[in-house]
Image (cartoon, rainbow, N blue to C red; front, side, top):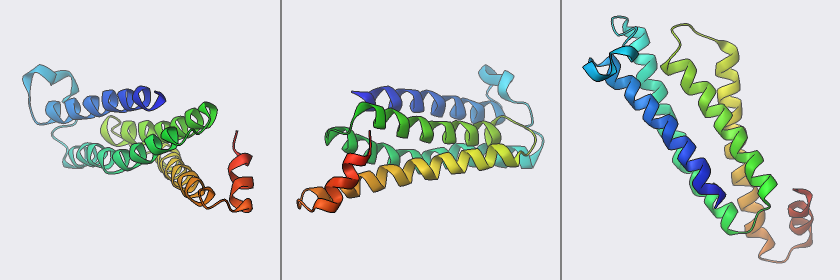
Length: 145
């Protein structure tokens, strides 16, 4: 299943974000990730990067699993997942690991995240409407590769 692969990648990154928080909070095993722990803004950014990841990711993967379950073509699934993960990785790296602000990474992060969520939601909606055998929605669904 394609969903398993992308969830595994997402969980791996989530664990990295979690370990960064451990380092900031003084865990001696993760001292190498504790840079910036004396700067309150960097600590807050790391905590928000971690929290923001977990706020968006479960919703996406619920919709993503439904897309795969409904038989969405693999190319479409990979495209949507990659868009979403590029967004989450960009945003997570910016907030949790970088000590400077970057409008470009933030824009890439949120654009990828929201576009991935929108595409997953839109395609799930189309799959639902196709179940009523309405020709317009069948044409829209056939538009996707």
